[in-house]
Length: 158
Image (cartoon, rainbow, N blue to C red; front, side, top):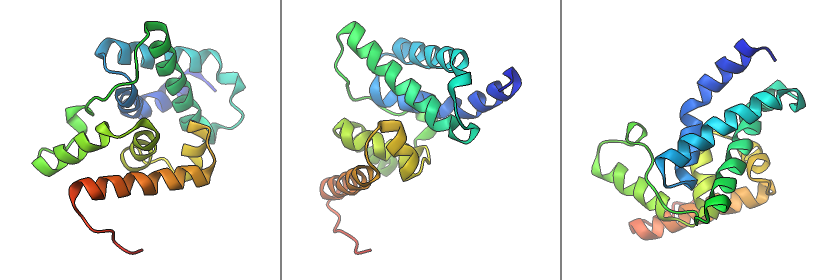
């Protein structure tokens, strides 16, 4: 992978990387450090990537690991935070939903952010979070159920 190809793909992922860091880290400085360190590690280890098609999931996994490393190094617990304003709808319902997502346990929050906000598919989320696809599906289902119960909505049959 050339530096130009790498740069283009990273620039396309810039918002995604920041949103994922927001889901894990509270401090703006920690988020920026995590994204920067992720990009450096991805560049250094780019030759270990087996398929260019897996680039997004691979870089996302590097970022998640880096966020967890920052939490461990600083003794911080993974905390709740807001998504950046630029991605949130301006209406009250959108803010309420975003706040509810950010208050969820991480096991539900990360799959929901990756699936609904960042557009990863079930298989990619499975690889990123290193959990079986069935677990991703069940966490998405349970997360949606929790959101519905908090919002007071009935379950919609599929």
